[in-house]
Image 1: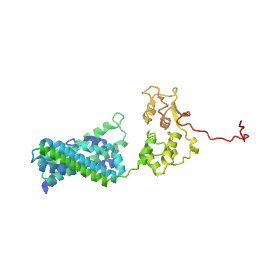
Image 2 (image 1 turned 90 degrees about the vertical axis):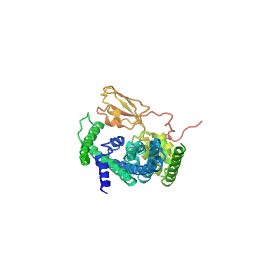
Image 3 (image 1 turned 45 degrees about the vertical axis):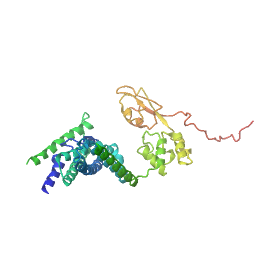
Image 4 (image 1 turned 90 degrees about the horizontal axis):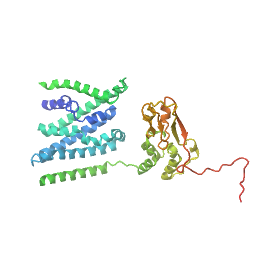
Length: 193
Length: 184
């Protein structure tokens, strides 16, 4: 139980997908101009990462590993991810058309979000069990959502601030992101012992 | 080899079936009328109708919440086409007031600040920093955004001359003192 809790805290804070592993930076910069959109994107990506990690774990354990098909790993994983994203897109279009419009191109682009494939590949490397891997994927996705929301909040504040013209727009966004990454480095002290 | 081909094919088929069934259950009814109406609108998202862009305007038209005369840049021609598509009798009598216009930049007043250039939704303004700008009248749809943003009031709006696309028969006007017309 304690192991699982440690695994989750580690995935959310210490080895955060965005700020420590630097995966999924496209949507991290792209849809964090408003907190609402960031929350929506975080929820959509959480669903996709968790579902695809479960599917990918099953495929890896029952198909790829026994039949020695390691070279098909990327293709099969992407196939599962694309399916999950398509399904999420349909659900969001049905449930919340305004969110569907604001997310725009970033919703189908979850397919190519490297955080999703990255988490799936990390699971293979980590040799986790099913429950462990599901929890790890869910925690990583939570970390992604957390960082998205925090960064969106920061950018909402920065949008109101008096930024020098030279830094206005994306440059100050990147600087904010790097400071946030520095702050998250502080969590790495937790895992030292 | 066979396992690889077979398993990938099976996965593809399974995912395809699941998504196909899901799309049946999660289908969103979209009004084909909306797409047709949106195609008739100019698509420059100028917002003069009071909606955010042409897509919300088309949605409002399809629901009957907006009059067919809502599109100011489109003018009479678009209003008539919208009315034809909706099967409505367009009441164009009050439409003379909002005639389509185009912007003209007074070269004596233009300071080349690029503000109107950035506002233009149809890229109708030609210009560069510290250079005098000008408007390509054919591309201008008269949203007056440049008119509002110009710091030196160099932009003025002019009425478009009637051409074949928006020409229509004038209504016969009854002039005072002329009751009947002589016929040969």
